[in-house]
Image 1 (cartoon, one colour):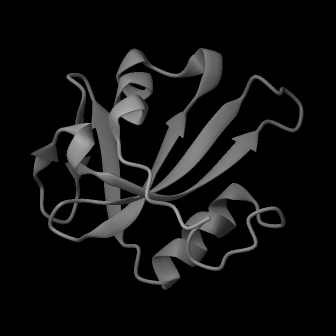
Image 2: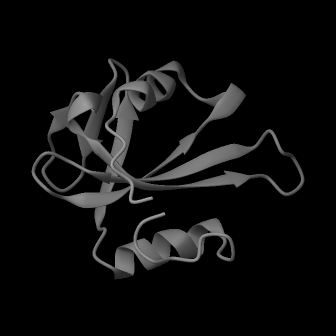
Amino acid sequence: MDPGIDQELLPLHDVVDALEAQGYDARFRIAAGPTVHCSRCADPYPPADVEVIGLHRYEGETNPSDEELVLVLRCPEGHRGWSLVAYGMNAPPEVAEALRTMPDNRER
């Protein structure tokens, strides 16, 4: 995951806190269409215009089907932030569709 966070050691809320402390202050929401809404510029974008710059996957400790992603995203205006989404069997169709078209620009 972007930006130097040891993702394997941190609980979900600590990853989000660390991102926000590093200036990833936008919150993104994936809605029907699908569209991706950025809280900083208040604009909806097609998923193909929003970059994935990092991600971290979580599975529930007591229930492995509790699957969530912290997506680290950048909108076309350059605002960086995160979105918490379900994935796997529990993913809403708009999330699965958005993830298929978002450019993956993670550092590897």
